[in-house]
Length: 381
Length: 195
Image (spheres, each protein chain N blue to C red):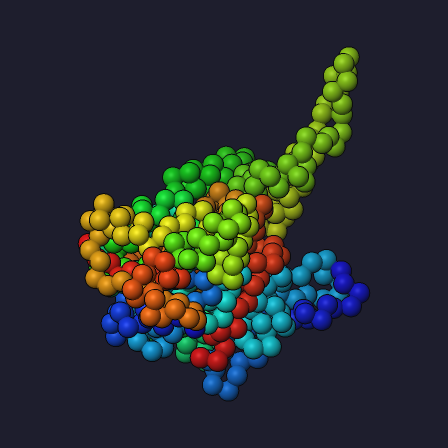
């Protein structure tokens, strides 16, 4: 909790909710007749309405990307290092919109919302979502906010996939697209990690075929293990070693002792997993990781990424991190090569970092410079 | 602008698609975009230089030339440029091959190590030349593969590069001498090549 808000913070922010009664046809063929989106905004939309930036959130993302909800908040929003006055996404210049996607569990319509047809929580019956469904719902949010063209659509990881999809679905509505630590599709290894996480949830006895809310329970252990698996893939071997090494939290290896030993990393992962299980809905986790697995930018363009990007009109900024093994720099190289092949404007930087996939959320001088300078250049366009 | 960059623009067609290897702060790329309406990308590995390119609004790609140009399709650029970077590469001849695969033409500039000042320095002092143009000591220099105007001629013959045009330029004096004896009086060599 800050005693005084830092000068480069967007300050105290209040989430807003918008209801949409126009039915949304989803990629799976089903229709969401009625839904709501929770979002936050930072900065001011200018008179020309040409300074708006959309932040697409990553796997467990939240509409709360920057600032504090109250003075008693322990931590600011998840991308506070990058959004604020004078920060790379400068709220003195840009109007920033960050939302909780449909299917999420922080206020937007999702599996834990009430299904109007049954009066019970949607649970496992919530329609399967794909990245493009989020993009379409975000476009409706833009309509309601009066934003015809985004100055930039920005996302890290799964958010980067949304940002790329934006440029293909609504090419005329995106001037710049920033794709950070992302990929055009998951590798088999990525999918394997996601499936292992999902199985952890599904095999929890409290999962109850996804109807745990009706049973008044939560598959807490499964969700916790799922998060632990995910968490391992977001960190680098180096950072884990630096932070925890083989330090013990309890017990000892003394000869003659058969005390239970607990490593620091074990206790850390359990703590993170447990925390996540308190805040996140298991069905949302299944739904969102599936959307991640299904995403394949070029699938409907004959598996030709160059052909896919021919449709884009945006200029691109692509950033990767050297030790990110979840979305390795090679995945970003593929994006860049496809953009070059399609003769699109693209700038690419590979940030030297020790922090693995998580690096995209952490303060880093070079990353901040590249990002900030790029965005500074688009203000005057 | 550096004198070699000024010469190069004469060899670039209006509106062409170019790739600038080791583009530095993007001065040339920006100049060509503005004056020749070219479209293109710069490749660079130095973070500070990449930032300067971003400030200019250029398309800059962080890429190490020593790892090749495998991400670029054959003949996908009208001209591939490389100014004053040849001598920093681990395998200059392989990069030249790649340049001519990716581009229909290429333009290369490099400091001529056969220039009389370099020879004089080595001859009189017996030490590696350090000058305004080559301001590094031998042990910390990024320049690891110096060659002379003549050496490059030999390489072009050996690898069947077609020399469309060649020039030597000097920042200051010696304009007449350099035309008569380019290997001795030319500071910077500029080659315009094709397959």
